[in-house]
Image (cartoon, rainbow, N blue to C red; front, side):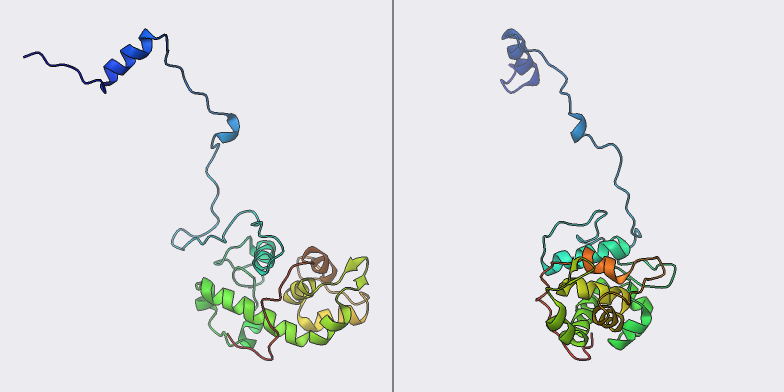
Length: 209
């Protein structure tokens, strides 16, 4: 018995296309769509990579999340599991002394727990807002060294140098400034992280994680 080819057969389809003058052509992929090389991953292979772990700062506007991620990128490129040369820990580069103020005493657990790191960041913002509450009321909207003082700039600077040093910077109108061990000063953080909406976190006295 003769076997007939189905119309869905590749041979039949090719024959039909050639009959109508169609030819198979190589499809060229634009250079901009080609993957030139794999993206470098900076995180240990045995760790979970979260959506916030990006090699470029995520664009989330001026929201509180935008503030957190921009600051995290500056501190560690968003890497939860890193420790710098001075022993500062995690995505937001906390010192152990600051963590102890918030009730965190186990550095290893902290470094391996992204949820705990996020809670610590929120708690520290609440703590610094309480310490600087009078300075927020007095200085926000004013200009020091040509830079408008904002609440988010103050919180970033407090994360860098401590709330006490931010008080001194503000009350001296910029005459008192300090830098970290890598040369970044309060004035730079005031400018770099100005204008974010961080009203999501309320000030709290001596908050704990």
